[in-house]
Image (cartoon, rainbow, N blue to C red; front, side, top):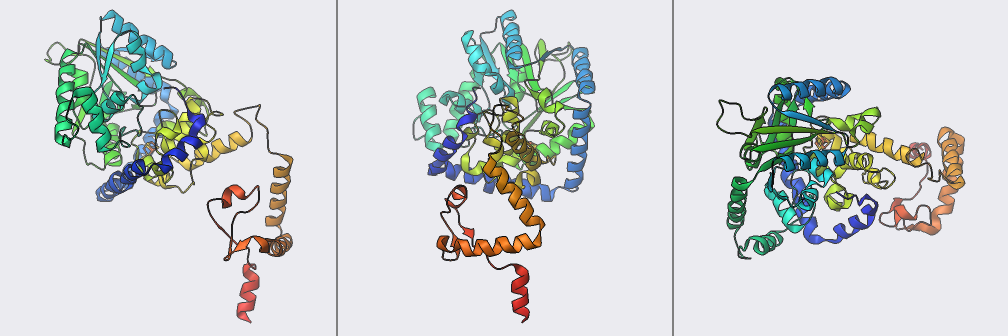
Length: 473
Ligand code: SF4
């Protein structure tokens, strides 16, 4: 997917003014977020599960080479083929090679964010291979020529009217069709595609290293049909999707599903180990697993960012984030949005281009609180801000101006010394009077104008100790 992370601010401004999209985004909080909180409260030992999952993730990522090797060995033992792709281009090349060898003309796809990283649908189209998304949200996005808006609910920004319009244009359903009629029309269309398809391509929620088993979580059954109906199945996953054992996976399933949609269990949990065995009726003749790096080793190499690889892509931090719920998913400009996207997208694309994303947070900590694996997102956002300010990602970036340097040195002196603090307070109170309106500071001159353009700032008052003294008197 072409990155437009540079345009974050202008894109966000447009979304904030779109009342229709704003009403859909509000639903993320009252719907998914509240359902998650309810399920977390209703689950015995929720925090214990979180702590165990966090420990497993830290351990797996620290020993990723060991578990990747174990997983690859076990997939091959089960009859599958494994390909390690260093980047999106290498992964696409492998998929196209397998498609060519098998004379593939039609592909059905389960939801896969990594295939968005690869722009796989466009690449298949260039080879005249039809690729059809089978998750309903992804299908709508594909018909509309858009990209996913949210990790879990890709078409959350679309109104019912827009969906009716898209389906009417593409499937001929009446524009006043009911939701059931629209879903039915999409299902009929996709059923035919499942039957015709030569190849299924899916992502992976998890890969169990000890057995080489791929796990997919869906609510529509499309994951199961994509993995079992076509003769060839290719699963594509980021290298961080490994869990060591089946027992561990039980923990992640409980956390993922509750955190993503607030369900206790999703309608379908599909597990695939290799291609169809001789005694099995269903399943593909060939199973390929593509394990993709595409910049993840950069995150792995940086101890300050490694924790981002613990993400299980549940989307809970997006639903909890007050910034995401205002600016929406497309503003972030690449595959991953919201708080975790503000870390992953810059690192996997180009940090200087995406320099506004780490600032797209009030650092309120709602993301960290919502995260089922307790990822410390605010810490990593602060780290990226610091790296950007220090020019560590972009040597051509101008470091702090002399004015900024003096201001912060001065601030440092003032807060460290009570005498300077008192003098500064007195001078500030004296100097602020032309700017005070109804007890608040508004429309301050630069460099504080950006802050007070949209919000007021309390006026400086007498220090607490002085007020305490006069109260006592
Ligand atoms: S960072 Fe945590 S809350 Fe956000 S998507 Fe990843 S696992 Fe879910």
